[in-house]
Length: 504
Image (cartoon, rainbow, N blue to C red; front, side, top):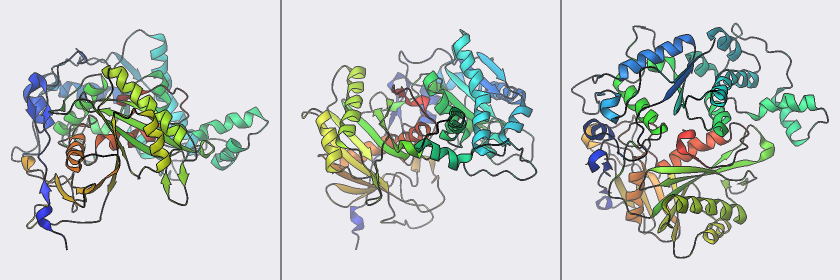
């Protein structure tokens, strides 16, 4: 039987904001003290907007609203926060007029997204948004920090892998070779250039969001895709509008990511150890082009500064049908870790003291030998396996679930950690089912399990793609997942590492 006396609760990690003030909730911290004020803080947000004429107008209206105070939906709910206005929260101006505005024909979008060949439909629809952005970057001098791509809801509905057209809305896209023939041509190339050219669109994932970001990676454009209905949430009188977050929450989330994607740091973890680097290693199968094998990506997080760089590992057959796991060969592991380590040195002008590698599988001997060869012996290199676990469910008495931060040690190197659960400061549990823990295992190297658990708790609080009290996954894996989706959505030739904001 389980000894429940061994279930303990970690302290909630604190975040640092302006004036070096520390609080647990990012919304409270930004409301009271603003973001970290350093040389990277933008003086203003230089945004570009691309959408239909209606979408551009909706963005204007939303921007005007977010530059004002937006009340919380219910004053009796401690988990809901009023939004004070962008400049009041982030101490940065966001001009009411975007730097660049590009309107796209709504009719052309509607006709393009409804093409019968789904690969062609998504590719051509992405082109409607991608080409004017590229043209702007190439021909105009106006600098844009972040591009807001405002899409009609039909693009979201029909622009995903499992989307299906009805017979009445389908538009015949003409004769095409189809994905089966295209994939055969990738492994057995044709002598006819026309056939190979026709096959190219099938190298791209049938996902508007992922494909757009992947195709703009080498242009260094930072993109935020948002649906028109998200921006009108709470401001529209449309009774048929889908249920969404309240306007204040939408403002908190979108404004935080806009500030981050413009180069600013909203907050960072307080009281962190210097010289500690975290790397998230995630594999993603390249379903669009099986001839290239599997994609590996490593996402690096600098814990102290909150910054990170993304590194694309080599494509290859890293998946084993026998073990059902992904692993890198020694040479690829060494090359990837060498790049990660050099990036840390370039940023900090010194080597890290400790380097933690987070992954979902146990690192095998060959993989670890490659990592170890790239990292000098005096740097403490630690491999940590993190997976969702249903090995144990804990039920609290009454209606309140287990507290976030609860943990149960399974040994000196393994523990269960509940990163989701009841959040006392918010008097709520942001979930619907009994929370499942993360299984944390120190698979390679040596580290104190208590220290590892505390660090992972901290890493759940630096997801700048939203303004959350905490996420369920540490950012090392959360961002690596997002990066993997983008890296395999299209052929990406440029291998230079880029900051996270280009992928999320």
